[in-house]
Image (cartoon, rainbow, N blue to C red):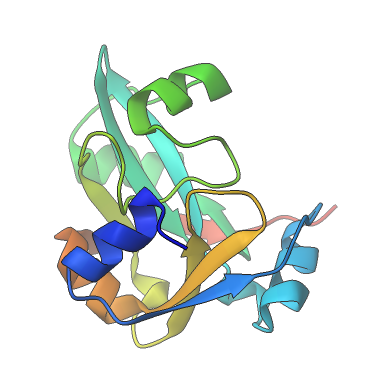
Length: 156
């Protein structure tokens, strides 16, 4: 497998394990298919700060972005999530496959502090494939800002 994401991981010297699991329909299915707990399925979310200005936010699978915390961290009053087509244009990846590794533009990365010290899985740029990496190593390689930017997922 030689996609942009895998190549970027290799170029950054980040040890990783490719996990091919086929289609999944939910976070719980992704965790089961990857053989990890739900918090270790890290979601890569594209956030828009302004026209042509994006960033990646990495959030554990059992959590969601805390918009107030993220706005405070970034010192902005407004953030939004782009639609799927805009996210694709900004990253070169389809929703469900997005990763900061190998993005068309190396947008800034904010990683939720709860990932620290864990092995996590991230999208690998194509459907049905993930990469398992040491979170601390990945965060360093991405030059990510680590902060409390999430809240627990509300399961109704």
